[in-house]
Image (cartoon, rainbow, N blue to C red; front, side):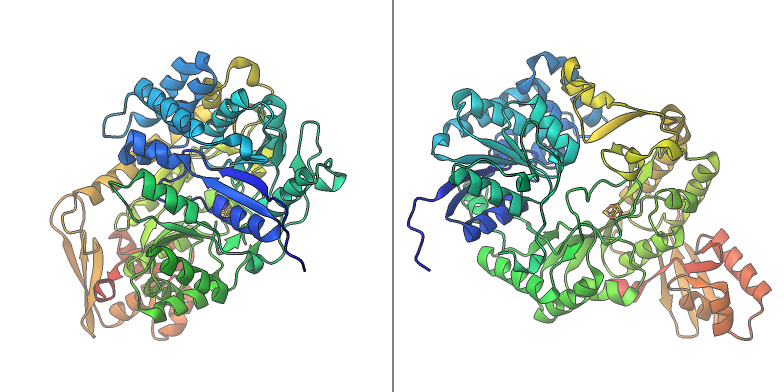
Length: 603
Ligand code: SF4
């Protein structure tokens, strides 16, 4: 085939604040590599969040980017000056509870405005055929602001929005309300963006087959996705590193690199979840490809910290992947989101392969709430994964969803009791329920007592009134039992705070608060409890054997089958006694030992 010597289509891709500053944007990296492979196209990727992080300090940036609303509130007055007071109110209300002192809102707005203006002025935008914004978590106001500024100086430039915050009706609604957006890519980016660029390059009009590219009055209908994501090129992170070297030349840092093992979620049933709206199907890369991709990035950029962007790791492929990484004997470290994994060997292998921190979808410590959430897990599964991760040196991060609609007093009591059993493990954070656009509860809220959908009260502080009822937003307000839930959950918030304080106050963080040492015929359990001296418990003979057997959740019938001489009555009484002491957990017909093996934890 003769080489294409015509001048390339020029595409600018932008990721605005509040992307995590020490990571390149995987969306920009993926699209740049794909577009440059598929057509005669030059893609320039821009990460102005680096400029903003440098201007306001990385510490302040980290704090703001960790909150869903604070960053949007800082850009709201730049787009709608009349919203400044309300945006300031929102900013302080979402950040004020945490130390250190909240930064000055007005000063931040002015610094951000100045920094973004300097950045916009530094680029010759009229060289681009299309300017694209990747709009995901916390990037809506910053992207609207930048698009608005660009259109003011260059009204003829074409602007496209895409990303998880522009899916379906929300994308259409953005198009209708903001003339600075010419197109929205709805759903997976690669093929739709390619199709749009080809059309603009050929100066033809969009065909009816391009309905995943929305334009005012367009239909919401998706074109096909990438069938096999193994065929995608590696994301191109070079522009991020070039910008970082320039902006942070005096204080260089070593970034964490994002990796994508899979798209979508193999479970995809949770009633509160809207994380998978942009995907039609669940797809994954194979372990070999993933390993090569990781090695490539490690060698190209000399980084050892990686973060999987997956909603839930694909377990079978992950088994082979971590096995291969473990065999390399390198000091690599991964963060990943997982569903509750109950197999100790698997967690051990993952940790040997570098998995150091996980976000586990625990969500609740009440069985009936877990059923309402359609998590497909039980409380004992959740406690087991917290214990097994702790034992295998994997830090667990995660949330407990609070104020879930229709929560009963009995479910609150169950949660409060079960919180006492997880005291030895790394504390979770409370996350108040929000109604995500497109989630099963949003689509049919009646079963959850939701009688009407309303504009979200925080969104109302950011947008002027004439947007409130017509603009579709990612987070919805609703009429239901919100006030009641807020009251009901107060004791849970207090108990979680006590849990966090217990861990903060511990001086020896290397040892687990509940651990055992095995003497072969007996074992000694050491149990820290607030307040006072640690307790010591000794289990001998059969008691020791039962305790070790319940390392993972075991049914009563399983235990009886294992220890044939054991009477059911004695077993139940043993488990009850140890549960009262918070050394075991019993959930219906299953039991779990709670102490972690000290020797394992030290290796
Ligand atoms: S919450 Fe997590 S596990 Fe549940 S459907 Fe969403 S992505 Fe999947």
